[in-house]
Amino acid sequence: MSFSNLVSDLAFKDARDDRSSQISHVRSQATARSHTSTAATSVSISGDISSQLHAGYSHPLSRSWQAERQLTKEMLIYPLFITDNPEEETPIPSLPNQYRRGVNRIVPFLKPLIHKGLRSVILFGVPLDPSAKDALGTAADDPSGPVIQTIRLLRSRFPQLYIVTDVCLCEYTSHGHCGILRDDGTLDNAQSVDRISDVALAYAAAGAHCVAPSDMNDGRVRAIKLKLIEAGMAHRVLLMSYSAKFSGCLYGPFRDAAGSCPSFGDRRCYQLPPGGRGLARRAIQRDIAEGADIIMVKPASSYLDIIRDAKDLATDLPVAAYQVSGEYAMIHAAAKAGVFDLKAMAFESTEGILRAGAGIVVTYFVPEFLDWLS
Ligand SMILES: [Zn+2]
Image 1 (cartoon, rainbow, N blue to C red):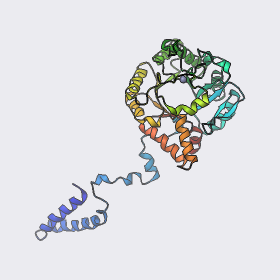
Image 2 (image 1 turned 30 degrees about the vertical axis):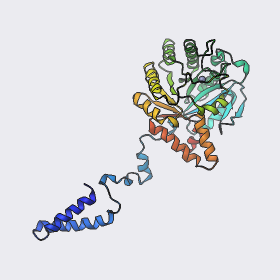
Image 3 (image 1 turned 135 degrees about the vertical axis):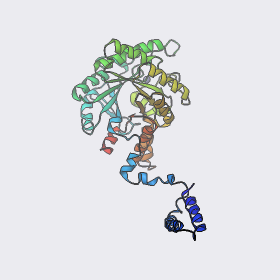
Image 4 (image 1 turned 90 degrees about the horizontal axis):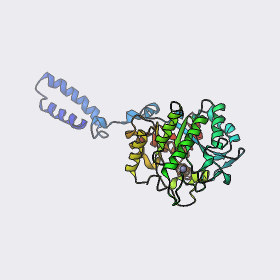
């Protein structure tokens, strides 16, 4: 029964018994009070008492209590593009405010960010020297290559910084694909997994806290985990799997940045088709069974349903979401065009990702968030 119906029902009963007893006299006084209060509120109250929600978020603090998860600096991982020229610091035109940096430029760049609360970075190797690329991606685990050098440097200079390394071959292969190819141009899964897991092991040995295979070859999580166990590093190296990585145009600016565009074909035979929710669920379940410690979904904002699926399937694992280069670039472009405010949209987009179920967000907005969240 609604509040206003309840009041009019009582009023009717009271009117009927009005002349009879003292009890009804007391009741009618109560009714009169009810009438007074109802007269003021019945305009706005048309449903149950439970329809009244505003008090729950009328204050800034009570608004913050309504969020199941709130964005904190600890949730953020910042992607860095490390190139093979140690002195390089070049802006990436398609990714506003983002740079390709050489190893000598990393420490001065990160120092103020760490001071503001930066906790974690993910490293992408971006060799620009053409001789660094071959059919097997040999340079990926070159001990003198930019990623391994940077891992060592950051571990010694910033001991508190949590270092994630993306693990893939596409930045290092002459053909730009994420593994080793057969003669017919298709991925040789077994050889690719063997190579990818060796690269992951090299990053772990150099001091990475977390290895994150993004290649999407079948079975690579298990292979990496087994090699980590064999090498006695499984207890200290976390394995974050790009489990549900969908193909699509949102990676465009990243490919610009990383110079990792395939020289022929595309990645649709190993990255997931955009409508492939069932495949994503199977990949997530497979990677949990193969020993992943964190499940990642990529891109983020277009796949909030998959992030929710990941959280439901990986109940006991953290779920990460990668807000990819295209998502970031779109927000920047729209803000520049005056469509909306950059800060407001960055928050809304990232908080939407958290609401879907992610507890970790990889995003190019990290430097801004370090200012906005302080
Ligand atoms: Zn790749």
